[in-house]
Image (cartoon, rainbow, N blue to C red; front, side, top):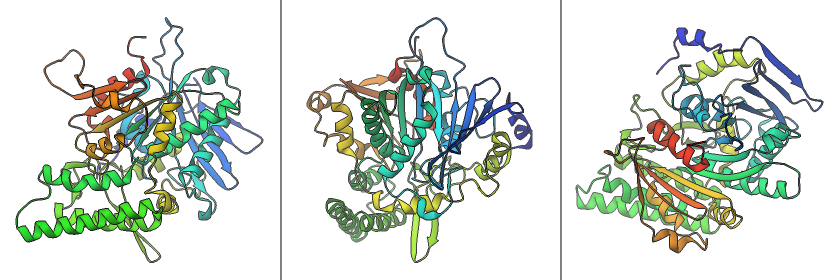
Length: 461
């Protein structure tokens, strides 16, 4: 495992760490921050006994020569069960990497960044009783709305800024329901946020379409072979039976049973592909050199769960419960980072296979910009599956969009190497990112940074 060096741990106590400002509200919510105001973090009690942790970075790159409001990005991690404050922040787009060194591809160059540990029970968020874990996407959304109302209540400066939600993997599902909730709350003036867009990065929007994409994709890229006609036919038969079973269970809204069938299908995929990394088909799941591992197996009671994980080989336990805990100074002594994450995942199993295509349609109809981006090498949310659910949209611009030609993407001034493709129509856009797996900001950091700038039109402010 990649460990955080003591040298970098000492470097951690980033500027301002020793001089923190704190405040406690009458409701028990607590917040702290650096003396210069560039970072704030805290807990919001979203329900009695349920505390959600957040961390907001103010960008040092805000230009002084423009009156254009500077945007804010809310990052929602996947799982459900993965920590945005850890993986999204230190692993992907925050100002420091997991070795606590400056990241020159941080998205702070384009926006302020708000990370949350959601749903409650993930990362530094916690519940006093496991029964308080959110059980659905909508419950998670309500908790996030409570948090946003606390953070932005009465803050006219932040309320007037463009607000974007970026969701990776399962975070994309919640990004959609949260986007709709924000629109409703701003309409009734319960919340003053200028929602401009929702971005779905390798997001788990239509499990049915992804399930049906795995076999064809893995055969096309030689992770599942054609050697032995009987073996091939047997794989195809088992795969098809399980995929159709999942499709039928989703159609009947039997989501708990569909989740069990889903894990059975995963076992078939692992067996026939020699343990392919679900987040990058070029790698093996057991390959410690991979940025990500794909299976976290736990046994709770009589059930076995395999949770798709976006964790890389970094020792996040040591990082988060060591120097980061020391910096934050508000993490309760009884809270161990990530300790409750598996319970947060299990609590939401009934919603795990629930599709969210109709929410994409609803956001589009309300004028919100929806951007989809997919890494070429991903399996769990394969591009083939993403393209399939997009074709199911009822959006009135779909036919025109599908018939448009893609535009190639390059990095900077270098036009010699294609980094991806892009296509957009009205308020919908799709980015195909080459040589990237499930986590595009990790595999193509500078291409994704340019993409973010394009999405928010902040490249030339």
